[in-house]
Image (cartoon, rainbow, N blue to C red; front, side, top):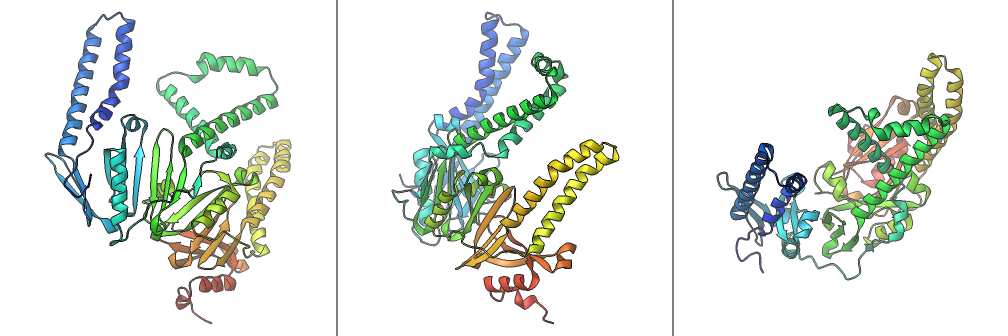
Length: 483
C-alpha cells in the first residue's frame, strides 16, 4: 500500500480503543447489579442511563474522528486533515522532520494499533493516534527515506548495536528514583485519605503496626523502616526497569540514524537523526557507579522541549560501564580517555562547601542546647561530607579528543559529556566571588542539542581560555580584551 496514492484514514479499530475507557464503569455497574440480584432502584437506573449516554457520546466522537481524519505522505511533505465544524489542515515538510516515534499503550497493543508521532524540534509535532502497526512501520520507513532532500535511509542491519541482557537487572535497584516513588505514593495516599476525612492513624493496619513496633527499641524501629523502604524502592525500580526496557534494541540505520525500541506494557520506538547527533553523555549515578554501572544518553537536537528530550534521548538501560563504552564506540563516538586534572583549589572549594552544609545542620541543635546530639551528628556527617567533597573533586575532568570536547563532573550523578566541537555555538563564562578570588572560571559550552550547556567547572582563567580557543578556534578570542 503506497501512502502517496491518496488520503488515508485512521484504523476502524480505534473506535474499540475509545470505547475501552468505559470498561471500568461498565464492570462496576455489572458488579452492583450482581450483588443486588438485578434489582434496579432509581440510583441504578440513573447510573445505567448515564453510562448509556457516555457510550453514545464516546462512540459519536470516535466515529466522527474516523470519518473526518485524513493523512498522507507525499515526496515533499506530510499532510494531516481533521475536524468537521472546525477543520484543520496541517503540513510538515519532509526535510523538516527530526524524529519519527512509535508508541503503543496496552489497549492499543490489544487491538494491534499504535501511535506515530512526527517531531520537528520546534513544537509543531504531528501525531497519528490509531493506525495499524504495519502501516505505522511503513509510514516511518517512507518518511525517513524521503527526509533530507532526497537522502535515502538504509534499513537497520541484522545485527543490532545493543540488545537487552537480563543480567543487567542487577543494576535496576541501584536507583534512588524507586525510593522517591515510594515516598511520593505514600504522600499521595495520605493526602487522599485526609481529603476523604479519614485519619490514616485510625486505620486498623496502621494501629497494628504501631502496637507491634511500639514496644521495640527506637534503633530497631528506625532500622526496620529503612529496610522496608529500601526494599520497596528496589522493587519499584526493578519493575520500572522491566517495563521500560523489555525488548530493548538499539540499531544504527543509514546516514547514522539511531533507532531505539523498548517497552513491555507501553512499547516505544524512537529515531534520532544522525546528522543532528552532537555526541553522547555517560551517566553514572552514585550507587550504580560503585558497582561499575552506567547508562547512556544521546546529545542531539530536534528532540523537543526539556521533558521530551529527557524521555527520547535514552540510548541504553542501566548496565555495565564497559557496555556503555562499547556502544559509544559502535556509534562512532570516542570513548572518554585520560582527562586533564583540575587545580587543588577546586578541592578546597568543595570541602568548604561540605563543611558549610554540616555547620548549617548542626547549628539548630546547638541553639537548642542539644550538645550530645550535635556532637554525634558532627562525628557522623563530617567524614561523609569530606569524602563526598573528595569524590566531587575526583570527578572533575576535561579534554579534547579529536573533533570532540569531553567534560566530566558530578557526585550524586557523575556525567561525562562527549560533545562534537563543531556543534558548539558559544561559550558561557561564569565566576563566583570564590572563583574570582582564586583565579578560577567555569566554562559552559553552549549547543542547540541536549541540555543546551555542558560545563567545564573550576579551571584557571588562563588555562580555561586556552582550552576554549583550542576547542573552537576563534569563537571566544574576538570577544576578549587583551591587556
